[in-house]
Length: 338
Image (cartoon, rainbow, N blue to C red):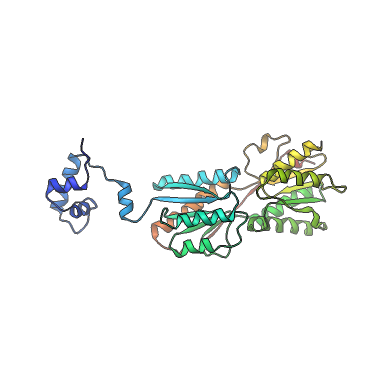
């Protein structure tokens, strides 16, 4: 059966292809009589427009990209679900790109996206990223960018984040109120604004409760190597004056801490208490259950996608200064019990 396309409609009606196309789009340039003829034949032949071809004519891919550092982190899995919920509603496809926490990979991905493959981009930075020129290049080419969670403060684009400073303060204060005085803070990158804000909150809580901060308890862990992180925590817990609590800034450092405690036969929370930023669905099932600062990951993804589509639909960059801050939640479980 022959495909019914604009050329066939035009041939049977004795009209130009452009005239048929404008009639189907209900253009004011086409008379009501001609439109009726076109619509009648289109119905008769069951003509179905090609949405992909239409998007090409409009110079739109109807696709957005999501650039994230990893997928193993439950936060990003949930954020993608939030993004997808809006993209599907808008009839868009979502392409996921992983930087694996590598700056060079992030640069390569953004260069690939400059070709017009996508209409807009949602970005959460890699732990290695300190130079943002590749992202500035995207903006200069007119590709809208919305940052979420891990953001570039110096780029004037919309940002969706959580209250990391307040949450860091709340986590440390909870440990202090549980009787802890030597609280280790584990982070994966001092390049990331989220890590720095969480640490600022931790330090402020110590100061407000008149606890002297020991710089040796602020541990910079590996971005890439989980085995190295495990060894780092083992070494930390073998110290003569070991910490009585661990504040993990990301969930994989909490998991490394659990493994290290098991290896050293240390009781949680008897010998050491642990709290972590985490969206781990199994946090309540760990032994003992893990106290977490849980981010509204799904809502973050949904909010970031909603802003991006507002920009795409209005063809306006007036949202560039928009900054949405959502609140994380402290969920107390057995790992910090007194």
